Length: 537
Ligand code: PEP
Ligand code: MG
Image (tube, rainbow, N blue to C red; front, top):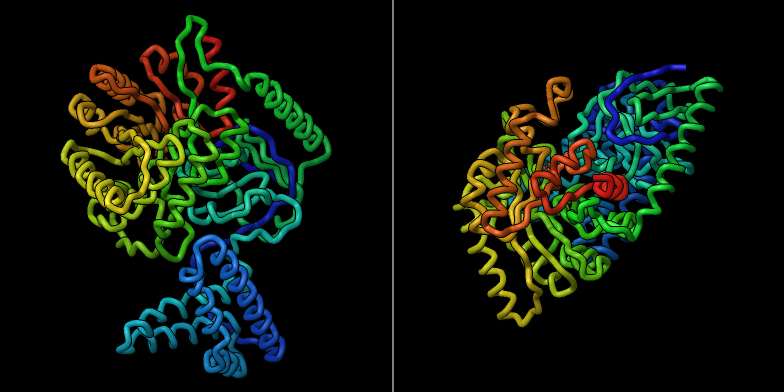
């Protein structure tokens, strides 16, 4: 039995088998192999599997984004099947080189060849050949596959997970995440919470292959990960799990009840989501609306920008499913830990304080306008609001409003129906909180992002697991900024909510109600617990 301690991101108990997940960029090392035929066979199997994956991606893309976007996977498949490419890899293997290294070398050679061509289309194939080679290497080395190869759901053990890897995983295959690194306020932890997975980060465990397939338990109450538990512990955990499930069942009695304190103060309890599928969890949890749709998750785990049509379909589906309840779509907050290769964001010394969110959108208006067009088109199908992240000035809001007006004008001239859309901003920088009196004159609501507001106020990187010990989430400075924001918002008659993780901290519910917070937006997992806390005030 091995007991490891980490930082819990969600209460709850998971019992299941360990799945060792190795991600990340892996540079194959050259090795001398003995059995050339066996290595050639291994290569051909990996190529066949890569072909199957590409076919599946092509078929999925056909259904979700249409033929034009899906073509890329067809091109990849053709390149994978190229005789010259395969012959060069096989020639290296014949000389005793391991398949991983042979694929890497050949991929690099072809990529350089494409990059040197005059034709723009051919030059663009340089990245594709790297991509297909990477896929084959991942299969050969058994790493980086976000599709979990197991019939039963598993406890996924990883070094760390990026938000884009997490978003691509099949949630029905996962009981819990355990990561060696990571912090509880990272976006990966937020995703685990929204998936209702009792997970642990920053765990003192090694990523060893021998753990793969072993029985284990995750105790999200104590941040414990126990591999190979003895019978007593396993029985204890199963009993604890029963109790947790019973409590969750008990909370369901609050479905349909109001979020109202004993003295009659009503608070809206909305939900945070990252994708269309999350809406079912919102409805099941009886969330009153969507207080934060992290739209950037539509951009992650992809090879290219989601088209206007694709985004429109996603927003429309969410709005329709919410049947007139408010849906607040936050515009793209890419950058910092949320990266997509096709944005070509340069490495930065200090990404959290760098090129991120609204800064990128105002700098690349074509990307911003595509998203705004999709949201405004979808707004005809429900009650949509838009909020903008990482605001620090009145000037930014004015610029945003100009772009919004351009988009609305375009759509009107195209005779496209639109609904009334409320415009708000996130208060997640100390600058925004301090000038919230001025900002309140410009918008219709504020939503306080306590995750970033805490990081920037305390100068504590939310990704840095070493600083969790000194990161006081109830720091007076943050609470004062929240109070100030609520007061300034109310002075201008706009509503003020909280959509950062602090909104679900029931030890602060009374404080937030006393401050006059109008809305708390939390992961669907927390809705009923929060309702209970409000009703007990
Ligand atoms: C926040 O910063 O509190 C927030 C809700 O946004 P995100 O966590 O996505 O940065
Ligand atoms: Mg934020």
